[in-house]
Amino acid sequence: MPSAAGGIACERGARRSNSAKAFVDRASAPGPVTRYGWWVRLIVYNPKGGAAVWRWRLDAALRELRSQGPFTVVATEAADMTRSVRRALETTPGVTQVVACGGDGTVAACAAALDSADVPIGIVPTGTSNVLAYELGMPSHAVRAARALAGPTRSVRFRTWRVNGLPMLLQLGVGFDGLLMWRTPRRVKRALGFLGVVGNALRLGPVFDYPPVRVSGETEDGRGLEVDVTSVLVANARRWSGPQLVVPAADPTDDLVDVLLVSYRNLAELTRFWLSILLPGAPHLKLRYVRHARMRRLTIASSGRAVEAHLDGEPVLRTPLTVEPLGRVTLLGL
Image 1 (tube, rainbow, N blue to C red):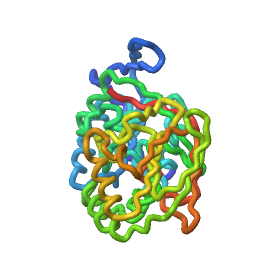
Image 2 (image 1 turned 60 degrees about the vertical axis):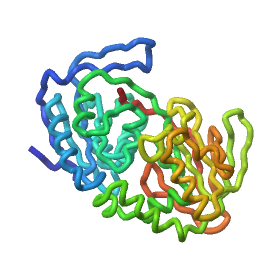
Image 3 (image 1 turned 30 degrees about the vertical axis):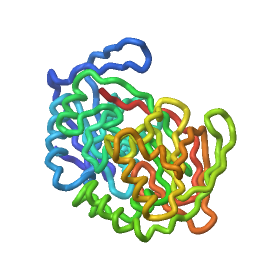
Image 4 (image 1 turned 90 degrees about the vertical axis):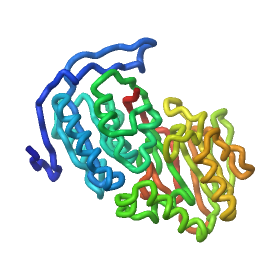
């Protein structure tokens, strides 16, 4: 039964079933290394993630996860998702696996709470875009993803990054993408999901003011880079807002971050870029006002007003920004 502990709504269980099978760690050996035994899971879910119409999938996935073995369930707090996860980890000794039921922000909050601890994170996608689930080959259906976590999985050691002292797992969007996240109310995302974000993009595009920002830093070959643009996409993975490949060369396990430096200056160029991202073959990379750089660290500054940015989908930052390596976290995929 649910109980309250330290301000967090937690549920604990000790049921075990035959569906709690081994998982596979391929990070440290050429072939699979199977670990047998019961896990102790912390199941983290975001009650406000994704469109409300799909809430039944979250409820069904939680039922599936509860049936698989020992667990503690914690709901994230809207004000600070990382704090609620960290508190649950402190009051739940011996956690061997964290399962994030939510979107990319929920997964990022779990990674931040673990702080590079060697505890793998499984993903049950119930958020708006669920980029990390696509990146790791997890089923897009929440219940199927929950069932998949009971079987063999592979471990992927993601490089994490620090942006102005905050951890970044997946992406940093500066410019139009950042403004879009700042100006899309949570209630709209909750009611309409990704369609709500698209609708708001159609409203904001015609009034976007293309604020100039300067990007400087160190590229993969150790050279310096300094360029003026109007939007920046800092990607730690190949996908940005769904299943389509946006930065095909990106590798979340290396020590580099992939940066799209975009210099659109009117509505036609902005529209063409974001429509091209949705198409196969990454045609946006061929646009004359788009440059791709692989970087070891970078700073993003604006000469005028502070420019809006989102971190892993959360509107929490504005320029100036500093991006540098942080640590690593283990994510489970298929």
